[in-house]
Length: 313
Length: 96
Ligand SMILES: [Fe+2]
Ligand SMILES: [Fe+2]
Image 1 (cartoon, rainbow over the protein chains, first blue to last red):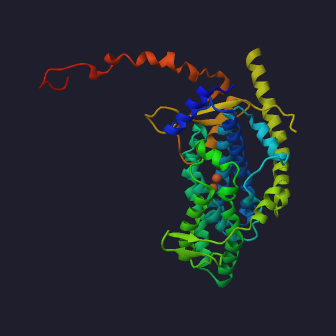
Image 2: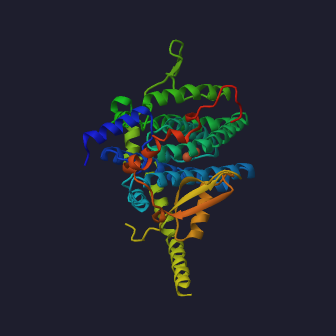
Image 3: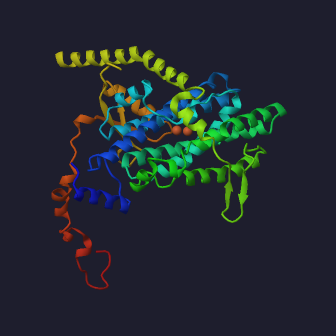
């Protein structure tokens, strides 16, 4: 039951910048919106391992293989930090994972695109992790304590992800004409989906204003996207790569890079499940879950046996 | 979908370096304490974030409720004589 007094206290805490902790009173809607948003974020980290995992066995040398392995392992860790934080809202992890495996949960649509060449690994680190950093830096200030703390932990790890990606991009861009063409092709394919990562325009974003009002998000989708474009364009120029947007233009007055319109039809198609890899991703998660069942079962049987030994001896 | 029973939640506390207290960092699921320690190591210490881990099964923790914060902690508020600033010392006297 929500009383206006509780709501007032909750809102004034948020206004003061105090964090909301698991046992604090919160509106039902705040709880359910956080569960939705945080579990989608956790799923994104987990599904995000798949496109990059695709290249671990084919990394061009040992250094690249080690870093890619470590990067993908970090993403697993990120998923687990956020599942753990989501559980503090009173939902079981198994329920969240079932939602993902049953195809009921959303995750970032970027991970429904395929990784066609080695250059994609560089471009994902640079653009996809780069966009994620912009978003997560904001979420590190989120009003919900456990989410904010998980984000701080994640942000510390993300910089390596972006840098290793940009190092691959730099190397290929300065390589043979074939390598340069390969990395340009990857940029062409990943640029627009990366911009879509920030979500719909502010006017069309149904959840955004509520999340901002509650201090979960501190900046709008469009302003985060603009910031990402502003920091990324000079990076592309530095390694002589072209952003695939003929409308890209610097605005002296605002200091912003004006960019063209996103293909929103593509965005909504991918969200609806019709992206190039949606089915493949869920199938891969299901088989990983099913193939791990015997391990979980064995661990449980062992723990039970230890327990009976302890109690009978 | 899954009929598996979920393994219990363990809260994880990490000591970042010698001389520092253990601090709560998150939680893991595990069937027993040994697995909880291993999972906590894998999830929370990939970069030397800690030198010691405590894991405690979450249902063994008793926590105060935010609603009781008043009765629990307010009594400390009016005892300013517990702080050194409450006391006066003659001018010029040092290191008291
Ligand atoms: Fe991540
Ligand atoms: Fe990352």
